[in-house]
Length: 96
Image (cartoon, rainbow, N blue to C red):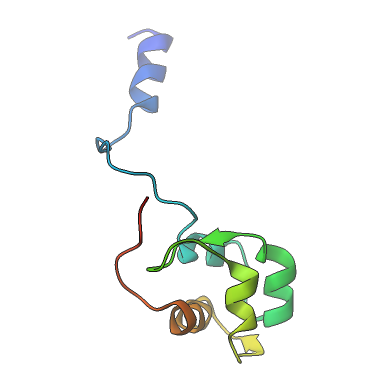
């Protein structure tokens, strides 16, 4: 097998993606994975506040979501995700 054949196999997705509408924003789990725990609410805003996250009502900026949360310190990734979901809700993500 040549190098180009190997590269071709590596770049193909493992699962075929559909032709459906695009989904704006990032999953909150992806944003949470970039933070170090524990993290203060204000530090999370400083580090990732400009990130756009996916919500059931459509994309929202993380900073505005965290402003609505009354949690000053997130001890863990799970606590952070729970606090964000308490503000934005859970359910299917809105698409275009």
